[in-house]
Structures are given as structure tokens and as C-alpha cells.
Image (cartoon, rainbow, N blue to C red; front, side):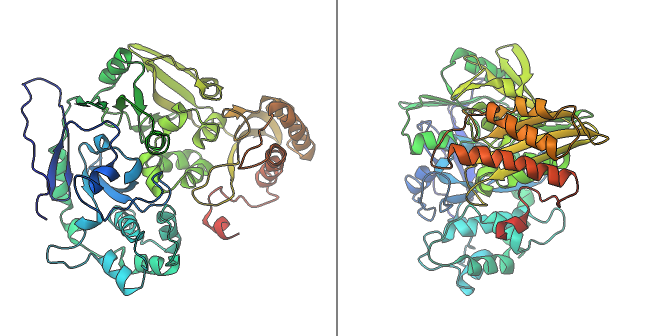
Length: 506
């Protein structure tokens, strides 16, 4: 591909922080300066870069028409190929990556990529508006698969395409195209080593600050630099994955004069298994954390599989989901039930607190100006603990939770010795059900204990009525989930994980 944008050169004085973001767009090396901090990848592609293959649909990360692929080096070697929504990703977040759009896939002689050709041959497109997004999602899945040697089946492709919507074609031909092409060899697989070397050459330990008349985009390279940046400007907006902040920009039209992106902070996305459990860096994405959390708490791994779409999970972070304090965020109730601890930092001062204590009221968290979430620790379940997470929503895939019930019940000889119960969607914050917990502890785990906990839930919560569910429905669902919990943990009903594929068709 011919270079589409000339490098602007680098006239920085020696020793000054980098004043531009640099990345590859296909075969073209980009150095971008002077951009507005809120410029989205979609607007940059369709505007100055004139790449109109990436479409604007919902502009909020739901429809997948804008799907592009971001390639980054993997910590242990190799590459990650991740589908993301260009409409809610910002250009500053591209630093150090390879960005691929649908224009990059065909060969120089015009030969279509196997995924593109399969979409043609198997009639996977009608109007074609959504087609580039489907192609990029399937392409990303094909490049990022195979580390376990398993070929994807139809269910796996359904998962990969849950964030891509099509009104006219019907999904069956698209899935058939995926099955026919996703494992096909291509030039990108052959070039992986060269791409990795090219991307690692971009890596440095410099802080990045891009300024423009519209504001400033900061990307500190270390946690100390992040602390200094936020201490100097406590009103700055912290940006992690952009799945929430992106909507502030595209839907609420907020003016955000200083964005501080945590995606370059060294070690900030690390996930470490310890003797006591897991240490999860605040910028670890859902996709990165799913396997580790699923190994520790199987239901939570499946819960995350139903959080948004692949594109959202590839961008959204565990720390961001906690820090924004949404009452319907899916990860906080599960982490609260698991007994997670939150670690915060402001300047040189660090403190820790139980995760449930971080949420004060709707829109209010226990976080001082300039303070940020640094990491989360999740303990191993105590012996005899049954952990469950039940998500109730109108759709199986990519839907906002109406009620999320999360439970860690510890049994000893049939008696409840400890209980942690937390819900999402039942209050203005993710909240523990302390009265229901007290009603269970010390009792035999039987139907009478369940009834006692059901009654106590009415004093734990005063749910609101909104477009997702009525207060009556929410309370009744939460009470009924206790029945399911009892049935599954006593062998009266089979355990069906919250995101088990067969439930999608139940």
C-alpha cells in the first residue's frame, strides 16, 4: 500500500517528552500532532485519511459497523489482534499499535482476503453497509485464534460477531463465511514477526503530551508520571478503554480539555496470580482478565463473556468499570461478592479499602481529586465456598443488566458459615445485601434459610423503576435468584453458568 500520510518529522529538543502519537496505519507509519484530545479514530479515518470503508452507524459502540483491528505486541512475545469500535476509540489511544481497516486486507494486486472472498462467495452481504465491520471482526478472530490449537465452531463465531449488527443479510450466510475462511492462511500471518519487530521499535518510556487549541491529551509512561499528572491537574478526565468516555464525546458532546490516558503506563495492565489470589492492574481489559478470573471464579469468567461485545471487552477495563461507579456495571458486584480489595493512589500516598466501601451514592465514589484506581486484588475462595453470578437482561448478548445477583456462600457440614451477596441494578450503586447475609449465616442451608434471606432482601434494597425493569420485578427476581442459588449448590438442579452458550437458545 502506498504511504497515505507523510511523517511530520521530529523537531523536539533533546530530552523533552514526546509531543505526538506514533503508530502504523497499514504499511504507513504515522506521527500525529496537534489533534483535539477527543478526536475519534472513526472521524480521523473518514476525515483526513479518507478511509471511508470504516462506517459510522450508532456512534456508541453497539452496531460494529466501524470495527477496526488494533495489533499490539504481547507481553510474553507474539501479537494480539483485537477488534475494537473506532467510533469510541480516540486517536491518542493508538500510540504504539498497528491499526488495520478493511482497505488493508486485500493484496496489492486486488486479490481479496479469504474472509472478504468468502463473504462474496457465500452471499454474506446485501446492502453492504455493515460488511466491513463483519469482515474485520472475523479477520481479528482468525489472526488471534489458534494458540490452543482449537478451530472455532459456530458458537465461537456467534460470540465473535455479537457486536456486529446486520439488518438485511441474515446472520447464517455470514457465519458460514466465517467458518469457511477464518482458519485460512494469509499474508498477515506470514508477516507477524516483521510486524512485531516494527511495533516493538516504537516502544519507549517517554511520556506523551499532545496539545492543540482544543485541549491536551496526556499519556504517561509510568505510574509515578500518572500520579504527578493527576496531582497537577485533578480536574483532568482519566481515560482507560474509552467505552464510557467515548459516549461522553459522541453522545453527550462534552468538552474534555484534558484527557489522561492510562494505556501507556508500564505494568498498569498486568494480571498476576499469587498464593492468595489475583492482582489485576487497573487498565487490564475484560478480554485480558477473563481467563484468569474464570479460573479463579468460573461464573465470573462467563459473566464477563456477556459484558458488551468482543469489541467492548477488548477496550473496556476492569479498573474503569469500577472507577466510573455505574450502578449497572457488571464487574463490581461480582468482585464485591468475591471479597475484592481496591487500591488507590494520590501522589505518593496509597490506600486500600474493601471494594464495596468505594461506592458512596449514585455518581459518588470515595475518591479524592487527583486520586486514581491503581489495582484490584481478588482473594481465592475459602474452602467450601460456592460462588455464583446470575445476570438477568432482556437479551442474552450485549445488553444492559436489569438485575445482577452475585453470591459467595461458604458451607461447612451443610451450615452457612459465611455469606457475601451483592447486586447490580438494585440500588444507586453496586451494593451488598447485608441483611440477607445475616439471615443466612449460622443457619442450615435449606429452604427455610432461603425464605429468610428472601424476606431480608426487602430491607436491603429499594429498587427504582426505569426502562429496564420495575421495582417490583427487580426485587422479585433478586429473591427468586436465591432459590436458583440453593438448587444449584445443593445438587437439586444442574449448574448452568451465567453465560453458557446453550442458554442463548433456551
